Length: 309
Image 1 (cartoon, one colour):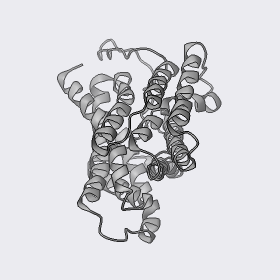
Image 2 (tube, helix red, strand yellow; image 1 turned 120 degrees about the vertical axis):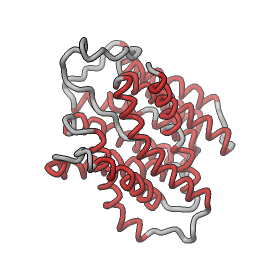
Image 3 (tube, one colour; image 1 turned 60 degrees about the vertical axis):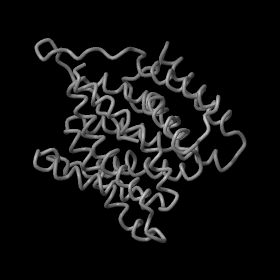
Image 4 (cartoon, one colour; image 1 turned 30 degrees about the vertical axis):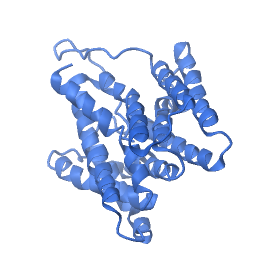
C-alpha cells in the first residue's frame, strides 16, 4: 500500500477504536438518547455540505423507506444500544463485544442471503467466535445481572450493525457510500430530535463530556466515514476491512490506560477467539493487493462497509 494508504489505515484504527472511551465518558452526564442525537446531528452537519454538491444523495429519495429502516437498524439503534450498554460495562469490554459483528453477519447471512454457505473453516470460525463471546460474558462478567444486561445491549448493537450491513448490500449497492452515510445519519438525528428534546441534560455538561460529544460526531462518525471510503479507493475494500480487527485492541488499550479499566484473562482469551473466529468465518484469507485498472476483472462492486461503532 502507498504511504497515504498506511496513514489512513492508522487513522482509522484510532477513529473507530476510540468511540467506546468517549461514549463511556459522555454517558456519565447525558442520556444515551441525547448523546446519539448530538453525535448523528454533528455528523450530518459535516457530511451534508460534502455530499450534496457532489450529487451523492441523488436517487436516494426513491429509497426513503429503506433509508429510514437502515437509519433505525444500522445507525441510531446500534448507537443507542451501545450507549445504554456502556452505562453498565467497561468501554474496553464493549469494544471487544462489537468485534463480533463479522460473526453476526455470517450468521444472519445463512437465513437472508442464499449465496452464503458456511462450511469448513468458516464454520470453525463461527464456532470459535461465539465461544469467544461466551468467554467474555462468562469468565469476565460472571453472574452479575447489571453487567450481563449491559453486555447484551452491546451485542444487540453489534447485531444491528450486522443487519444494517446486509441491508446495504441488498438495497444500496448502486448508491455512493457517502450519500448513504449522509442520509442515514441525517435521518437518525431527525428521528431522535423529539426524544432528545424531552431528555436534555440536567445541567450544562462538563468540558470533558462536551469534547467527547464533539469527537464522537465529527471525528468518529463524519471523518471516520470519509477516511474509510478514501482508504477503500486507495487500498481496496478487502484491505480496508482489516481495520475491523484492530479497533478492539485500541478500545482495550484506551480503556485500561485512560479509565483504569481492568485487563483480565477472560478478556484476552475472548479477544483472541473472537478475532480468530471473525477472520475465519469471513474467508480466512489475507487481503490481496488491489488489481490495476487495466487488469482488474469485471464483476459486481464489493459490498459496502457498515457504519462505524
